Length: 345
Ligand code: F6P
Figure 1 (cartoon, rainbow, N blue to C red):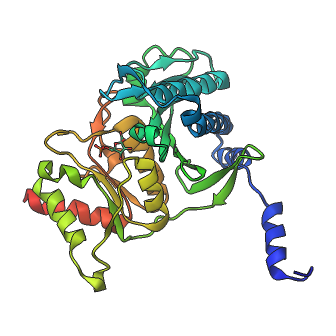
Figure 2 (tube, protein in one colour):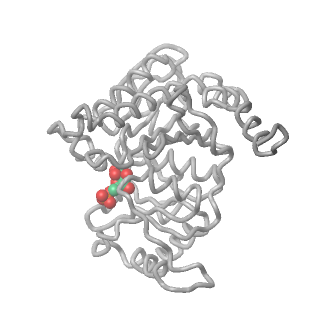
Figure 3 (tube, rainbow, N blue to C red):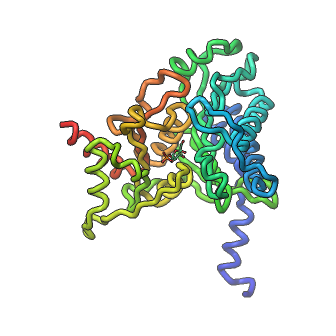
């Protein structure tokens, strides 16, 4: 390869334009006149790096077991669930920017700061898809950042979160073949990959747009005997052969929402966890799973629905409330809503 080789020039160019998550967050937050939000994103990213390190080493350090307790949703807690929860809480506490945290692993909200400057409430699922941990396959973290309307005293955190605050950032981390960090402040979605050698998340997927439709779906078909007729009809429709309509769709279900959603965000398709006879209100948690991811998917041009309306319009009633959820390509999610509406008459 000589100096004039265009491939080499391209590589040099990309290298010199490396954008770290920290720099990116600072710029985006400054554009929104919310510089403290950048600090919060940086702390969440630090927690993600620490959790990535722990999950990578978990099999070697013997940290794949359960601890014999259950979380607020009734899921058995793993050692790594609790460790990741602590890591996120410690980083958020150190930031001084979050007044309180709601976590899947905590029954009650944890108050962190009562001081002025703690403008945000953070809702998170420290390890999503944790049944994958023992196998060493992909898991994720999800976060939603809610802007307070009050300052200082945060004793009424439930009232604030359910009735006053607004979602201003949503994102996730995927601990997979690489560690990916994807976030949105509402107007666009950007994706980063952790460069372990330099310890930085670097921009790899600027301005992600979710394709209008896809060719794969993610749903636990093992629950099909529990579904309502509209969900059954929708999945049958996706399974039908119609080459001109791009069907059948491929089924891809990993048991970790982040792994499934990451594919769908980049390549199109639909993820669903509908209401069923065992989960009449769905399984996924509104405040720290469905809403932040819905916020992000909409910012990428996709659609996020309970099946009967926009997920971001679902009223917040309790910290650990669940909701049916469909996320992904706008056309695929709209078709799902149509099937549900038609079956309901
Ligand atoms: O709790 C959320 C979650 O673990 C998602 O990550 C995943 O998509 C889903 O639940 C798996 O649930 P099930 O095993 O019931 O299909």
